[in-house]
Amino acid sequence: NAGVTQTPKFRILKIGQSMTLQCTQDMNHNYMYWYRQDPGMGLKLIYYSVGAGITDKGEVPNGYNVSRSTTEDFPLRLELAAPSQTSVYFCASTNLRGRGHGYTFGSGTRLTVV
Amino acid sequence: QQQVKQSPQSLIVQKGGIPIINCAYENTAFDYFPWYQQFPGKGPALLIAIRPDVSEKKEGRFTISFNKSAKQFSLHIMDSQPGDSATYFCAASMNNNDMRFGAGTRLTVKP
Image 1: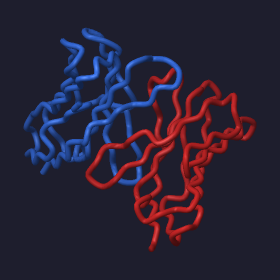
Image 2 (image 1 turned 180 degrees about the vertical axis):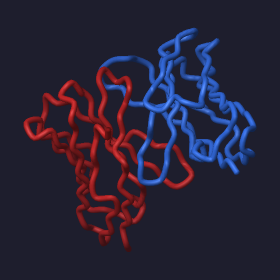
Image 3 (image 1 turned 60 degrees about the horizontal axis):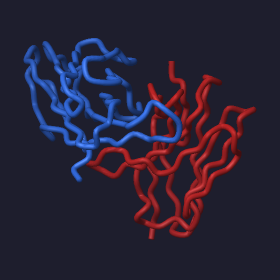
């Protein structure tokens, strides 16, 4: 029972480089989310998806892109990395857009842009 | 703008004490208020949650108190233990989507 799996756990990027953060869940959840966590700022929603083929912007989408070709996978793409994207990124999922269901989070990807 | 404000930023209590973490929200359309617990190097994990139609919910040593008129809710940890040392986040959402998080409280329980 893996839950939400994120890879890689750590990554250092140079300014201007690109990368994809991977997220996979094995709980057949329809709803998936990407958050970034900065010290003292809580979690900010980047993008979310309510099902395969459907994605939408959250609070802080600039500099990121997502896709959702399958129920299980929700990769986050960083194009032209900037130091402001240094953060810890969390993927989360939930099974219903309804009442009484919390999110299941992955263990995070710590990204440093230098 | 920050839709969920959390305080304090950090909290230190002795073992057996009752730490209290407070949150205030602005959007009256929020209908789900969870608390998450996060240990270093791990993702947040759902701890306990409440809906605005009740004023209190208790699960084990953890209690949420909810004041709808004041748009505030709080987490109480009874008989706190060193293993409770973690960062706690309050959150709020509508229909369990677009969850908005507080800034977090780092709790330290001293033995």
